[in-house]
Image (tube, one colour):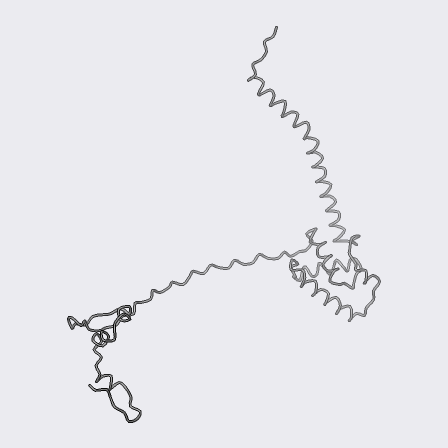
Length: 211
């Protein structure tokens, strides 16, 4: 009679069995996905080649323009205005000369010569879908960071006056001056009535302050 393996021996065996079962189930799925990708790539190449070199079965033509006829000058004017309308409402379109040429060639290959704004947009999206525009919008140039201008420290506003107690000259801050009474101000800066009289212009008769 064979001995039953302890439970801890079954761990590696169970994991191996689970991995084998997982591989058996997923292998066909991976194979199918690979074939779908190959098929999709082949179809995209076929459509791309057709768009570039022959008529596009899915080209959009506005109902109002089917069978329409215009003079050469009228066609040029209509197409130009339609293109400007398209560009104004399609900021995603990079309006380079090469991309404009790609649009024109697409319509010419399909024998379409009168084009409205909706047709320009549908055609541009079709060419964008298959990466058929030669030019991509360039990345904007980075704006160099400007170092902030150093703020110059403001120098404290000071005034030279006299210390009323010692009579010596000293400097006073604006805060100290603002807090002075009128009497302190006159004593600190030695403003006397005679000097005030001399500093007031006389525009007519009148009395001066007594010295």
